[in-house]
Length: 148
Length: 148
Length: 79
Length: 79
Image (cartoon, rainbow over all chains, first blue to last red; front, side, top):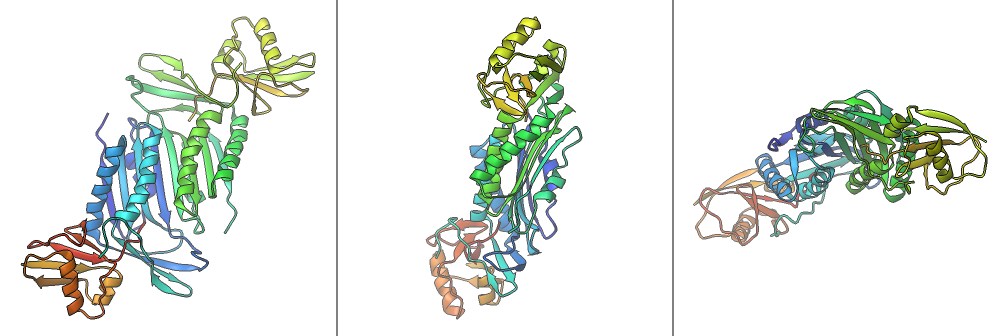
């Protein structure tokens, strides 16, 4: 069985989910699971015009490595893609993608489930949401470290 | 919020996962999850040449409706694609796809997880596996009804 | 009554056909039908098989009705 | 010692800069540094913020070393 590879993507371009699935596909691993987070509108009853994602790019990649190491400790994974898009995204556009392959279906699915929870904890990204009525930094929530 | 739609696919052609993800994507639902099962090789130590999937096509669609109704009873889903390919598939090709959107990430992910388990129980499909050394009907396992 | 019987996978191979039309005397359940088929088609062993009537899974005690489509097949192995 | 300090999101807006170079007297921990920044940059409130040193999350008691890159930011809201 080939060694599993990690692919980390931080980009201002559209996330190409078909390419990510091709990257993790491998006859040695019979299961491929993916999770995509997309900009939702309406949100809390308001029509969203766009969300501007700000990120600390170097640290996003460092924390993606932390996430991948964590996921691989608990799960028997094949290949893994962790991707986050930054910049202005319109409703329906994908901001985050987690794509994993594994020999057994449980592992790839759990990588997506655990992965999205950890991404929301660990990746240094902040949403500035612009709706028809308001523009605000979305209140975050993270248990990554003790706040000041 | 729009009503969720179900799309059931039984085909001898390649499963177009990018199209399925586009079908379930909707600004009203911020999460999209997918599961793909692909032909694995080697399997149990033997190089697989192909798997020929036989199906009872009308019943597959009927049972996909049963699955979709079950999933929607337990989960708050947006759109749902259930797809199974039949015929001869080579290693790495996708035989089954489950793609779901939801407002909250948990629901789409659980639809994939529960969905693949139920698909393996309910969909009337049989694998004839041809390896370098042997050709056999893969032994199935289902709790769909009491056997004779 | 007349019913349609379908076989799949290894049962299709053993029956050497995918489909039969049978005339039966009611009342009859799935188990009775299986016994009759095994008597008429030597080498076709239905023990351990699953059964569906009109595309829904049924247990062996289920009664058969005029016009039903009854499928016998091995435990499924799809996905 | 010299360190680089980064701000993101609402803290970047409040600091009116993304980046500072600071000369500090060691030993100093993250909490001490935050207090000093709040004293020098009126209107920049770091209470409730998270801190990372060299791209790894740290708690407020963590000591700062020469050459560190220290980032302050609000709880993350990505995904």
